[in-house]
Image 1 (spheres, helix red, strand yellow):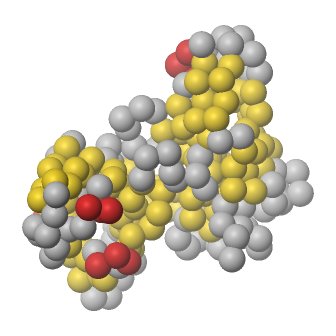
Image 2: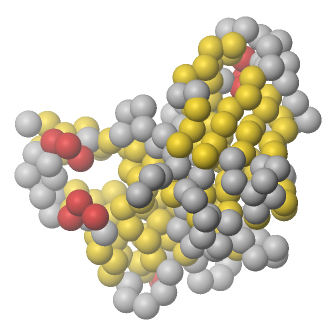
Length: 116
Length: 112
């Protein structure tokens, strides 16, 4: 069965420091992978997505992620974190259903705290 | 342009009450999804519509949960005889065909 694992429940970094959030997936075929961010009381905002092609994907707000098939990973990175990046981050894989649509399978999320 | 909207944003229900949660997808989006997000968890799939057809309801936790999208745009998720375990955030997402899903702000349901 498809699954997504985010090993880090909670991460704290200092403002200006670099960030890497880990994501591992289990999926039989070539996955469609996503990172979403959720601020308190808000819905999910798409940061970036990987469908095919270049394995290094650029997203909004200065985020990037790298798809590594050999490691079944899709880690999210940012070179310099801003206080406004404090939020919960979700990695997701799209499970292609036989009816021709994708439903998302999410990890449990990583809560990011940023110290001034 | 306008994104996905959901109403109400917050709902408090007494155990046993029926509730109805509304989703207005992005105009023209064929696909509509409902997800349930329990506290401290990632969202979990509930059901999927393609236009007005409900093609997948495999994630609905019980027969107390019912969803509809009669005209292929607005969708309503109804929960009958609410239980405390139904307390969660209910997220709606829409997408054009099989592409990226765009999420609404969610409805936070608290069942007392």
